[in-house]
Image: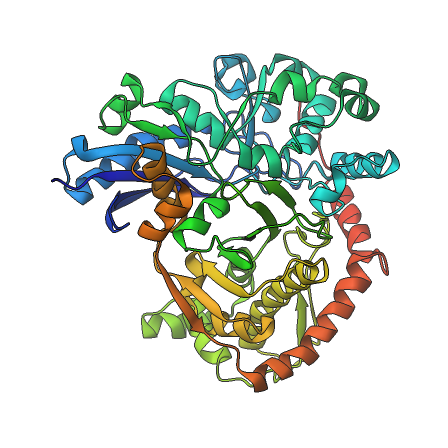
Length: 556
């Protein structure tokens, strides 16, 4: 009997990747990556060249379709298999990446009259310009004692659907009125593949405030803004589909794009972090998965419901059916390390790395790993892109404390690595304090290739650290869901057991280093609470001064 295959397509922040996977054992047999032509649109709008205000981050949906047209056929060619042996395709997306569209799925930015309107484009997850709207959403929810606010750790993020939707209404009401749908890109791409609009339970729950079968009430939304009363019912509401479910069959048009057979299973959409949990066999209670890349998303299953301060959300069936799925996260991790290398590394360091034939990151890691814990005398706050958990404040900013004239680049680099580990420990402790124990930390994403960083995380958190045994965790996770949608496995747990890949306990905490990190972490928490919990509002004041100096221009 011939082997059967599925395809997982992971839509990231800067590129999309397709992975061809054998159904029987999860082996990857072919892959391809395509960069987005427009990348992240955060400086000027390509259609007009108009400058975007601070904290904006957009994308062009044509880039998503280009991934389907290029990466999928290229992955098939790389695999060297007969496309007739592919039984299903599934996708995952960064979230909350959300776009306004017409009733037939046409994005507003694809309409000629709106190509010059920033609000017509998909707002990427790291679009943080809706923070004022998020602040009002949270304040009113607490004032009215809305029952759903505790499911999100007490705060709704500026990154999510309601904040971005309210920003659209208030800043471009004409576009808001023209938008029949306000839809996650995760659901939009599935719509393009199978011709059927679906909404997945994951993004609806974590990013769309859908709890216990309901959206926030019309009365609450009207209190935010009279024109916002019908937002949920008019632009979001749709029957929710389970993860691993079949959204429909691949259309003839999409079959032409991909080189696949029309009619094969198209799985319900999903989120990059959540879809990775089955790929890493991290679906049991207390197994926290950290998907580490430009940012980090932490997801975990539990058999019981709890309200964890500062978490991004808890959703029934949000990761796998039958469990409560928890999410937390850090807005900047790899982005912080990249920022330091791009902006602050002396030329001699880059030249030394080039002479060795290694990256600047690898060179700095080599230097930093020679140090004992605390030797650099520094502590940093990892808020260069705001704080997602546990403070839920996109307007916070980072810092490095303890700098002297003797401080070296490797000192700062190590302090930044440690700061992100301290941020993860803060999240773990928030879960533990709420009665949701974390017994294992598993890492997926590109940063697991840095052994110093992985050991730091094990030492700081005092947890055994497992690693996903795949370079394409989200794409593998999507492939697992494609196999379920195609009927090859009865559910996601069964598919994960057969197709998932993990290296258990690859790093163990060292007691001596862990004790030394306890002292540094105590200083981190003092700074964390002082600057993040209202002890000193200087970071917010500095942001306001910056925005004023840049003479922020509201989009037309």
